[in-house]
Length: 172
Image 1 (cartoon, rainbow, N blue to C red):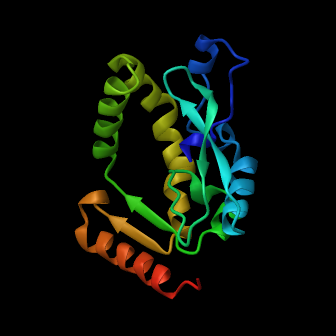
Image 2 (cartoon, one colour; image 1 turned 60 degrees about the vertical axis):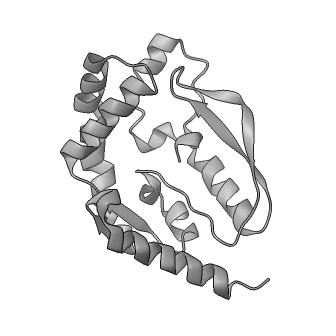
C-alpha cells in the first residue's frame, strides 16, 4: 500500500514533512482499488513507486502482471470497504507497540536517513494516534489475526498453506 501515497510533489519538502502520512487520506485509495480490480480481472498494471526520502512519487512505475494470488500489504488496507471487498483473505499482523516503534526507528534511520528526534516526534504526533484511531480498530475486519507478528511460525505456515491450496485449485 505504501506505493499508493498521494503524490505531494506540489508541496515543498518542508511542507511534505508535515503531512500526516499515517492518515487514510494520505493514500490514493481510488488508484489502489482500480489497480486491484484490474489485476483481479487479469490485466497488468503500472504500480506507482514512492520515494520516502523526498516524500513524493517517482517518475517510473513497476509493471505488475496478474497472478493466481495477489498479496498486498499495508497497515491501513482494511480501513476502506472497497479494498476489503477485493480481498479473499484478510490477515492482520498484530505486533506489540514497542516492537513497531523499534522497527520504525531502525527503518527510518537506516533507509530514509531521518534523525531520531524527527522519528520520535512523528511517532508521538501522528503514528501512534492514527494507529489507535484507524489501524487497531480495523483488525475487526480480518479473517485471521496473527499475534506476535512475523515470529508466529504456525500462523505463517497456515497462511502459506492457504495460498498453496489456492494455487493448486486455480483453473488454468
